[in-house]
Structure formats: structure tokens, C-alpha cells
Length: 97
Image 1 (cartoon, rainbow, N blue to C red):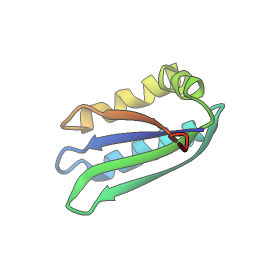
Image 2 (image 1 turned 45 degrees about the horizontal axis):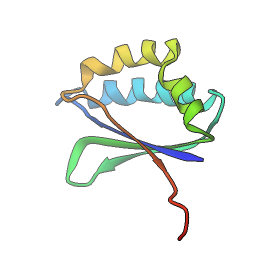
Image 3 (image 1 turned 30 degrees about the vertical axis):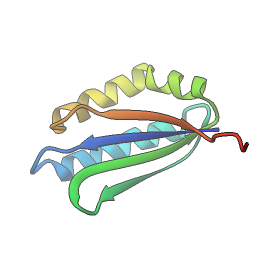
């Protein structure tokens, strides 16, 4: 299993519209092969900073979703609402020594 950390920063006054569209992205991701679970958090010091932590079966499954036409279409609605580029980090659990 891998975890994907997605950070986005929403432009001022677009929070409600962003939340609506971001929900659609998550709804589509849930049905993608290999998706396990996910949650979105709000930075306590910056309410426009959103962090999504998603669990995927494998990096291949994540890559398939990330590069899918469905995600690209949905992101084309989200990107204009962000005032910074999306930042993605793929994480895996380190083996115990």
C-alpha cells in the first residue's frame, strides 16, 4: 500500500466552489481500481490550504488514476480555483530495520 499526499491552496473567495468540485474528484477516485481510502484536512493556520491523504493499493494504481482522462477533466475545473500549483508526494512505509 502507498499513501499519496496532495496539497492544494485555494484562491480567496473560491472555497465553496472548490469544495463542491473537490468532492466530485474524490467520488470518482473512490471508484478507481486500487483506491482504498482517503481524507481531506484543512490547515489550522491557513484555511485555504487543503491536504488530502489517500491510500492506494499500489503506485501503479495511483499512476493510472493520476493520468486518467477522468481526473484530468475534473482537475481542469479545480486548477483555476487554486492560487498555487498542486503538490503531490507519494509515500510508502519504510521497512523496519
